[in-house]
Length: 358
Image (cartoon, rainbow, N blue to C red; front, side, top):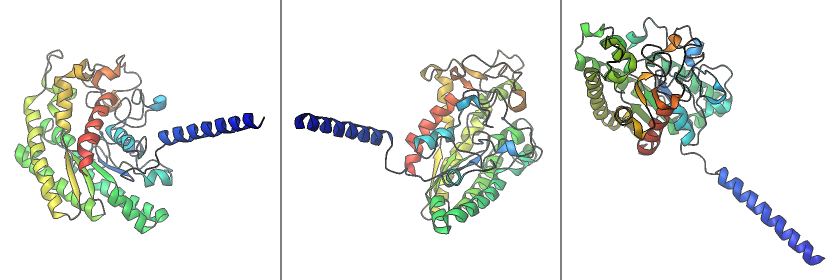
C-alpha cells in the first residue's frame, strides 16, 4: 500500500513539474528590452487618433479593420494591424499600440506606449493647413502632456527612465511631397525638388532634437516609400486604368530624399550624447514586394483591395464599397495604404535589421 502511495506521489510531482515547465516556456520571465513604444507620424502610424478630431481623414468605418481582431475598424488605415503593432508584439511590449487621444487609457497602456501619429500629417505644417489634422510639429505637444501623465502615476524618475529606454518610431514625409509638390505643387513656387527635401529634413532634424530634449534616446526614423508606386499616384498620371506602372520621377525623388536622410541621421546622433538614431529603409522593403510579388504571396501590386483600387481611400472606401476576396494577396488595401500582410513583412525587416542597432 505504501509503495502505491509513493508511486502516486511521484506521478503527481512529475505532472506539476511538467505544468510548471510548460507555463514557463509560454510565459518568459525576462522583461522586454524596451519598456515602451512611442510613435509619431502619418497614416502609416496612426492607430486611431483621427477618430477624435474633426477631419475627413478617418478610417473608423468598415471595410477598414476587416482583418483586425474582432473585425473592428479602429481607425487604422488598413484591413488589420499596422507595422507598429507587429513591432510592439515582436518586442514583447504589447499586442497593439493604442492612439493617445483614445479616452480612458489605462495606466498600463500609457506606461507601455502610445501613438501620437495623425493620418494626413507631415513635417511641413502647410500639408495639414486645410485638413485639420495634427502635424508632426504639434504631435510633440501631445507627447509633453503624455510625459506629465506618466509622471503623475509613476513619479518623475520612472517616467524619465521609460522615455529614455523606449523605442521611438518616426514615419512621415510622403504627404508633404504628394500634397505640396507632386499633386498640388504649392511648394514648387519656392523650392526645386532638392531644396524642398532639404527643407523637410531640417524640419525633421528640429523635431528629433526636440524629442531628445524631452528625454528620448532611441529613435528609428523611416525613409519614404516608393511614392510613384502608390495606386492613387499612378491613377493621377495615367488616363487608361489598365496602363499602370510606377512613376519613376516620383520614386527618384523619394530615393534622393532617403539618401540625404540616411546621411543626416548619424550627423544628428553625433551631436546628441548617448542617443541612437537609426534609419529604416522602407523603400527597399516595398519595392522588393512590388518587383518580386510571388515571393511574398502577392498577386496584385498596382491597385488596392477596396473598390476599384484606383482612387478609394479614407471616406471613399466605405461600407458601400466592395472589397477583394483575399486581401492578403494584395500589397495595397486602399489606393494609398498597404495591407496588413505587407505591414507584417516591413515589421519583420525592422525587428531583424533596424531595432538591433538601438
